[in-house]
Image 1 (tube, one colour):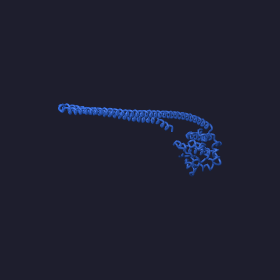
Image 2 (cartoon, one colour; image 1 turned 90 degrees about the vertical axis):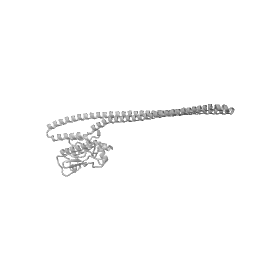
Image 3 (cartoon, rainbow, N blue to C red; image 1 turned 135 degrees about the horizontal axis):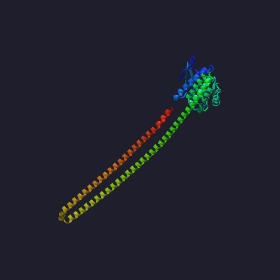
Image 4 (cartoon, rainbow, N blue to C red; image 1 turned 135 degrees about the vertical axis):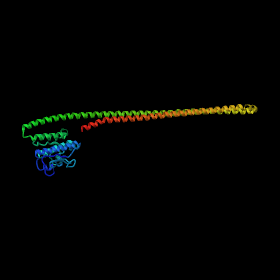
Length: 379
């Protein structure tokens, strides 16, 4: 990440090596500050943070400036460490802004913003001390907004810092013309006012977006609650259907067993009566044969007719029992068909539940997609 400067240097070296030679002239310091701000802006716009800005991590190559990785291990306390990092917070854009302010102060003043013998003393200086003026009210204002102890009181974006640096550069170039400088300062003040108004509108827009996202989160939560309620209702309905189906099956089995018992008992009674009738007939035949063979001979035909009639009754009885059993089997088939129909209805209910759940999930995705689009638009 580099930006060309107008004044070339000799060999590649770090900003720390350049500062070791003495204070940097204001025009050169302004160019380096603009290039450093541009490099940090590119990092932040990419959604990343540097986390270790210091003169040792800034490389001057010819007429350009490059921001190298941190020169110190993570957690090392340096004069460019933001106060919140001393409390264990993670590095973010705000801590990069603090380190930027400390580096710019050192370039303009020739001395470090915070000094201390050892990490403990340096931490105290960072948390409590305020650097003295570097000799320029405009630069002091820029640095003061970068070195605020409270992260929320600092300038949050490198875009605003770049704008202030460019205004500072314009004013410095025209410092020899007081009248023109005053007009330029008035223009700069107007520009700052417009920038403040723009920042206010952007903040209001961001707040409105946050409110919209909060409303969408609330609606999504309500939708998830409704989905849970629907799932509970369908679960209860399915349990009730299972209970009803079980009761129907048990009742059908009980009725079938009861009817089968009655039919079996009735058939046994009819067979018993038939056997009793046959026994009585045989007794009468034996008695009559014993008393009168002749009469027995005459009545043999009648007895045979009675036997034939008895056989016909027996056949009729068997047919009746067969019909009853057939009707019983048909009843069983009807009950089985009813049970299968009930199971089919339960399966259809399960399919309906799955379709309702799919529809609700689709609705949830539809509700959440605008939120992701809004987040992308904010980024």
